[in-house]
Image 1 (cartoon, rainbow, N blue to C red):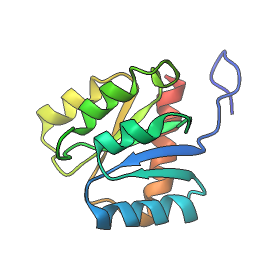
Image 2 (tube, rainbow, N blue to C red):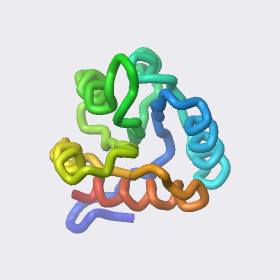
Image 3 (cartoon, rainbow, N blue to C red):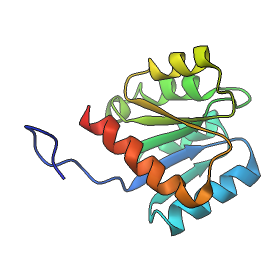
Image 4 (cartoon, rainbow, N blue to C red):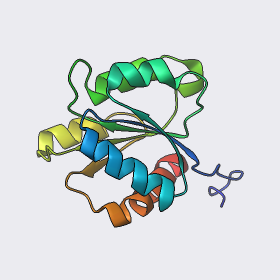
Length: 137
């Protein structure tokens, strides 16, 4: 795949995923590894994500918005302080689909949104589609 007028677009392989809900983490990890064939680094919360991210080389951050201690947007700010992650695309997962909140999340550079509840069977393809739009823009 190529971007118009540019070189090849890298393939989505590695996803750093943070969510404080264990049941959701398990479903997402299973879906992304088996259906999507991604390498997934699963984190229990924002602080865990910031701690584990170094050296992983994520192609995408998949972050729950509402987590205790550090929200998804706060986690992203911390992750993007690292030079290697400064432009890593992010998809926020949120159960709060209020227009103001959605608009605010979409103002974040290279960001997409998936709302809960989501369909586990289509999640990997939905993530691929959003990621492709983000890296092409």
